[in-house]
Length: 307
Image (cartoon, rainbow, N blue to C red; front, side):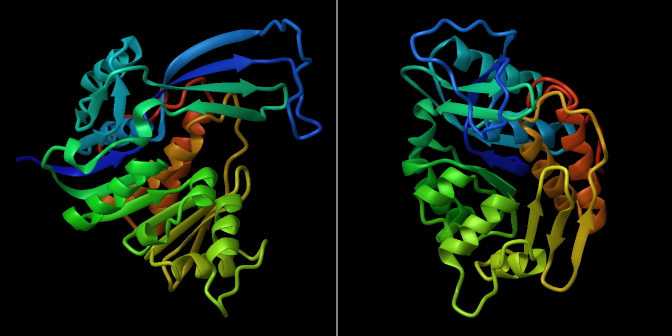
């Protein structure tokens, strides 16, 4: 049985990008009821946290597997063919029905709203995953049975865990059992604040705007390394002793979908090969800035060997 460097576990969906004329000045999209609205452009690509990060890891030269659940439709076949092209081992399962899909509404101001149908992605059972050996597990957000399976698999394999929880899973699930097993926790500032507001232990500071307090709070949940991003502002990493930071470059943003996955997988890849925190942050930033310059969550992920 081959040893993987990293196995990703999360969603596999088809992303459909809808470019609209609407501006998000009111912090919301508003579409007139009963109207037909023309869109400027419509594009599709394979997305989902599990596939985005698996491609990133594989292109960086890591032996990569992916646990996800797809439908037995043409979209599911596209996902499998992508895995073959990217030299990723499919470790998931195929269910009757449709593969998950996301509709991404992009506005004039580069804001976006994502509507997601997870399909079978939240119903992965431990019994559906083949026997595997891996040094690392990278978890993106799933709900229901799939989240329970993530926790069970982490306990079973005793691999190092990287966890990238989204806002919806922090709201819907008690993620603390998984946080206790986590080596590297990566999330954006809003997600970090939400997590600390919901679960901060008594006496642990979690004040909004104070990055060190926020990261101290996050480490109390169990992770050894915490990383907090904040769009075009400083990104921080904290290992309990020292705080590291990196400032994003001023690059033209074409589409932000996949930027978080790219940053997280770049950072974690650096940790996997033993790089220092500053070098890991640089790789994460380089990955995310490559992705946001182009359409698609993985089309411009870096191709380079880390070792």
